[in-house]
Amino acid sequence: MNQSQAITIYQPMLQSIAQRMLGSIADAEDIVQDTLLKWLTIDKEKISNTKAYLIKSVTNNCINHLNTIKRKKDECLESINPKEFIDKYREMELFHFDFENELSSALNVIHKKLEPLEKSIYVLREFFDVEYDELQVLFNKKKDNCRKLFSRAKDKLNQETSKIKDEISNATFFESFKNACHLDNPTELIQHFMEELQTKTEKK
Image: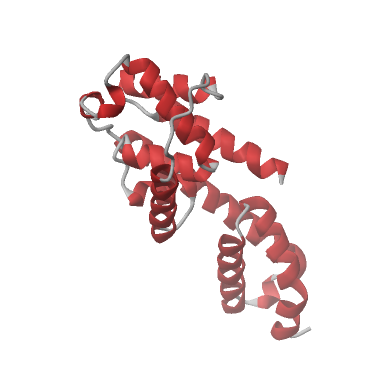
């Protein structure tokens, strides 16, 4: 079996393995391509089982990629410093009355109007001034995509003409948000977003 035949035979299998491990088609394609390019440069006589070698290489590369993403996420979380936004919102007409009740109402609108990923990016960008570089790492989305999601979220909220008066439908979201404000640390809030996105992914 020559190199071209091996690539034709094994690439779909390797792509499937990488995609299951990473949960991203684009990342899986990059990992498989890098693995195959490296395989083309090594001495094939040292490889007794090409299929097993490629599977192990792809698996290891995926693990390294996931560890790199985790490390970058941890670095981003450590670098995030929420801006002083509470006083600004106290001065807005939206918060003429009891601040916490109005905040609950506003967050309820955000929670009900936005998809989980839109909500995650909007809240972290709008309230905590998280940069697009950091959002890209946290949610594994390109910066342009993060900008579009933020813009789409703002458009949806601007179209809202009346506030929802019900009790907030996701108490965990509200509590995580309040804790992030009080502690000047959005880590718990980000974890809530991650769990919500994971739950939505598992339901698909």
